[in-house]
Image (cartoon, rainbow, N blue to C red):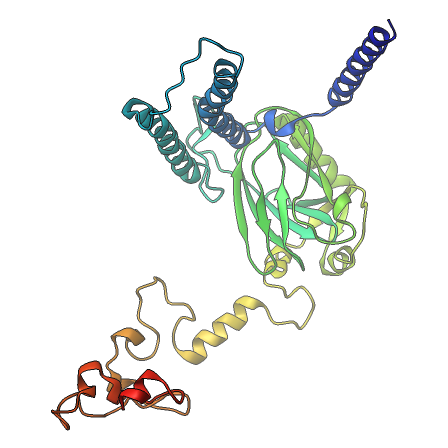
Length: 385
């Protein structure tokens, strides 16, 4: 009786624990599986397709594992025992052909999606079956990763925000992304995938939102103490609401000039939303070329001076292009021994005559021991000598 009571108690405890876990997980929002943008939607579909293809192998293997264990158990008197079995062509074909077909399908899907979802590739549609109308110009947004906050510049609207990204629905957006001091990752799960933000370099992302609503974006690359709070609010709005939002920012914000930016660029954590009514048009190019401070040379100017001094491009295009000066170098394995030269670390090859030429009757010519000095007393070669 006591045993039955203990079992019932354990059963109830497990049910309560399972219900508690389900209640806790119900508050989780799998934003990757609930996209609001077309790029994120295609990425979600790619994940589901890949999982489905892999389950075509995983599920049968798991089922057959249990089936074989049950069918060939010790207590099954009707099982077939064949100690002479060693090969089955049908079984071999099934074991190797199905995984091979799935690998081919996954490779094909990966290759096509890598090109179709390239972040630098301009958008061709707003959603499934909705091509971009002719004459539509993408909206430009310049993204700067700071320590530890996000700066968004809207050059067409002439405004800027900190930790707030507002986008109109069904309008293609072209992001230009860079960073100030550290490598970051610009990631808005409901909008598109992760894109690196690197100092002195510019990444691009083409994306579109299809549904209004609020979500979050953040940095996917650890950058220090304030990394956990480096988040921004992603706001999807109708086009009329976005126009009102931009007008309010134009009226109620300050001015983002060089001095204001240098103060903003100082490391800070948990920064509240800031809106700027005007932006210096040359601020983003100066951030990208790392010359915001007065008197600091820009990377593009330094590169231009180097090119003018050397008279050629610093990095010729193409892997097969010849070097700026001289001809294409010859690989070492294709160079003749006489053309390799000599040096303190290069041993001059021996110029001894070939075996049998100097001493035709010497028996050591047959085993080449005459060309090899004995290493130790009593060695075989020493005994032969």
